[in-house]
Length: 338
Image (cartoon, rainbow, N blue to C red; front, side):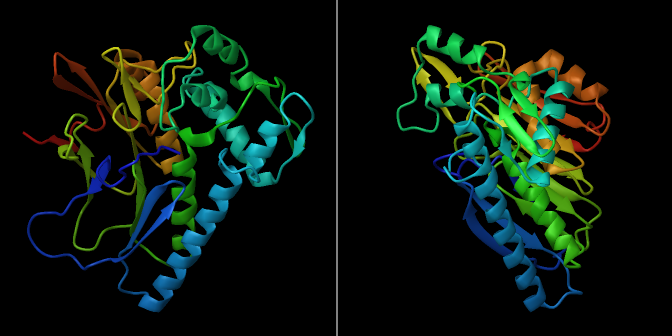
């Protein structure tokens, strides 16, 4: 999962209030889950509040259970157990986990390897989840890089196997999006017609916000330490995700190293400062913002433009100035804040 030590100060996406009028207040709940803060906002006057609260309880419980099965950071999770058997023997997995791993392989192929869920060993080597991250020895990077790549994962009928003993899966590049989509599905099944499920950097809106034609989503300025906004998106029901070099990073030798690793080099990607992706669902947006960040501004925008149903904003920095590149399908729906 994308994590931050000060989650609310580092919120990437913020639901914005619209000017004029007062729409109905949502039923809102927050919880700490998957090392991030989850917020659920439900807009539905047609469902009794006690039923809404029960649906939110179910939503949070299911999201917590799913996170416990898919994180690499809990020894009892499926992913941790699969990592523990790397190079030894296959692990029997449930149909939903098998489907998730297959989807991860598909996303890797779609992005020509820019989205890589096998970099767990390299992420641990860099220490971004520790109190003292540092630039590792280049030889160690090369050795772990040789053990990565989606080709290391072998899926059988109801089984998964990592061929190289040093390979470690980490689904953090799509984990929050996965949880959000599960939460939305549960709320919709309960009969709730409109709402938002969001974490520190991802969200998904569904239905129509009462009294509004669109959902208005704020995009964070990547260099504002106070979490100010750089622009506003006006969207229909969508999954939205942002990756930035300010989420988890350290400075060494005057250079910024962020947590988003380039699968080709094993070192942090550094050609973008922020990427926001809009997609039909949160999981796709979550995976593709990482991939586009790795691809860089030119290849990344070309990728966005040729992918059906995908739009995005890529931000780069030159001499302290932020440049925004907005995909053709978003230009009429994105308003920079002057």
